[in-house]
Image (cartoon, rainbow, N blue to C red; front, side):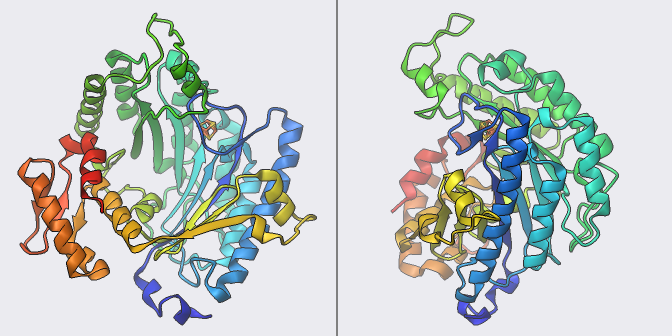
Length: 445
Ligand code: SF4
């Protein structure tokens, strides 16, 4: 079906994002449970990279071809953002990344693109790599080009980086950011759509940090935050470590593993978690970052557009093994987490067209949709607008939610605002962000 089949012209005011997953990692980090395939030798990697790029392009063709029945999920909506993540996308050569972007540019309307992010690991951002990437950018007149880099630094403490089995040390992380700012800041840039960031990817850098690491002292955390705040980056994502079963950390936590300082490897106590989170909020606020989502901080004008789309329930299409898609309404779909099967299905010389084995999905119930809206709304500083909620879910369910929320307002766990007293906005106060699971769970149906 055509445009009408995806809800008339309602896409015109909607954002839509394209996510491309590169499931390659040179080694496995001790806390990570994402799907990725390890590759150590360079030759092996190059060969695999070529097959992966061909298969990603094959899947893009397949998904775009399905727009006739709207399972492209984006249908004909112009793209607002592209995000190449992983895994480790910087294990691909810049030419491979360009190839992927070029292909996306041919298939989707990129005239309104605002943000094109590349996830990078510090050890891959060598002089040569950044120069080549910037060169690709400069020549990319008719191709969407990166205007944002998200670097997985995690910590500026060498001992903790080793504990997490990261491949870089603090020195490499510093150098990667400085070099990217120097080389990637002035060349290249985005000529597509909104001219918000036209100075190249070096002028819009995000870094990831992890806190709540067993054995991490307040002094170590403070030094990492001071370094991060002083780097001149535009965005910081700071995630609390979750110890997942099946990871190395999961095994250590289950097995009384001793740390260097004689402590036992175990989740940190709640009081320590609170102190680390308070320090994070204070340091980044003092450095001029706005805390716009539980784990995300941005300099004014630099909130992550792609991730904000996820949090506000916009449509997105995920390409690549284990990538997820959402149609902006009720339907979620994901690609099998199996690189070999993926390449067999979509690769250049192998495309088998056996899509049934590649995709899985679910249709969310109204109750699941409401709960999801509550969760993503309250994780953001804007909170959840009951007027919008009522438009989507009707008066009965909205009245129920308001009644529940008011109980949390009385206890100071939610803030109630807005001019419309009967349809207010509820949001979490920053100092209660750590209780978000408890509060959000209490509002769920
Ligand atoms: S580099 Fe990223 S995706 Fe790969 S193992 Fe480490 S945390 Fe996981």
